[in-house]
Image (cartoon, one colour):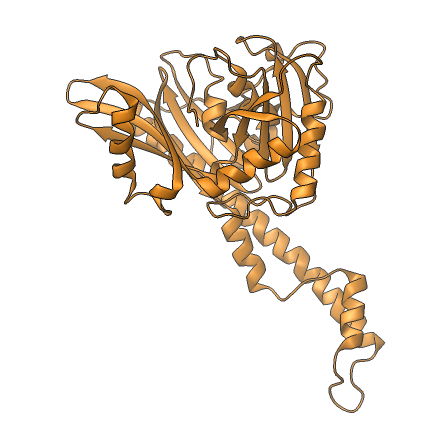
Length: 362
C-alpha cells in the first residue's frame, strides 16, 4: 500500500474513492491531474460501514454495482483497467512517528516501524498491511508517517474493485490522498475532510504532515440509535402491533396502534436530530482542536480551511459560523481550474473529488 506517493511512474490514470455515502471515480491524462472525466454513484444507507473490523462491505452486490458504474463512466476504451483505490479514514490508522534513527533500506526499516506500532494499534499489527514514508530526516531525528490497515479490511475494498472488473494498483487513505493534491509549498495548510460518518483534520507544511486526527462519528450515532426503541416504518409497525399478544381484556385496538406508530415516527425524528447535533459537535470540536494546534505549533492562526469531504465547503462554513468559530474561511480543495471543461460535474459536487484528484496528482 502506498502513502503519499511522490512519483506516478506506471501508476493508474484512474482513481476511485469509496465512502460510506457512495463512490466517486475520476480520470486524468497526466500527473497534472486535470480531471477529464468524473462520475459518482450512491447506494442505500448502510451498504458500506467503514471500520477496523471485517464487514465493512455490508451489501456487496450494491457496492460492486456502484463501483462498476462509476468507473465505467470515466474509463477510456483501449486504456488499462488499473485503478488507484481511495478508502475511508475510518478503515485505517495513520500515525506520526519519530525515531532516533531508521535504516535507509525499506526491507530493514519496515520491521522497526511495525515493532513501534505494536502498542499503538487497536488491532494486531501482524495481521495488518503496513506502509510508511519518511517525511524528514535530520541528525538524531527521523520523522515518519505510518499507515496500517487490517488485511481482512483491505481485502474487502480491493475485492469490490476487482469484482467490478478493475485492478487495484495502489491504495490510499482518504485524507492522505487529498493532501497529495496540494501544491508542495512552505505555507502551512489546514484541511478538513468531513462527511456523515466521520471527520479528519490535517495540517501539512512544506510537504511534511504535522497533524492527522480522525474522529469516527458512526459509533456515537450508533450509540444514540441503540438508546432508542426499535424503530420501523409505518407499514411494518402496523403489522408488528397487530401480531402482539393482547394485554388486558381489550388488547391493542386500532387507535392504540396508530398512536404507537405516531410516537415512533416522532422518536425516530428526534434520534436523527440528536445524531445530527452530535455530528455537528464533533466536526466543530475537531476543527477547533486543529486550529489551536496550528496556532500553538506555527505561532500563527490559520486563515483558511480547505474542505476535502462530502460535507462540502458551504455546509462546513455554515456549521462553523453557527458554532461561533470565526475568522476561518472555508474553501473547496478542488477548484474549477482542476476540472477539464468536458468533465461532467453536475451530479458530482467538488467536495467529493479531493481524494481522487490527489490520487491522480504527481
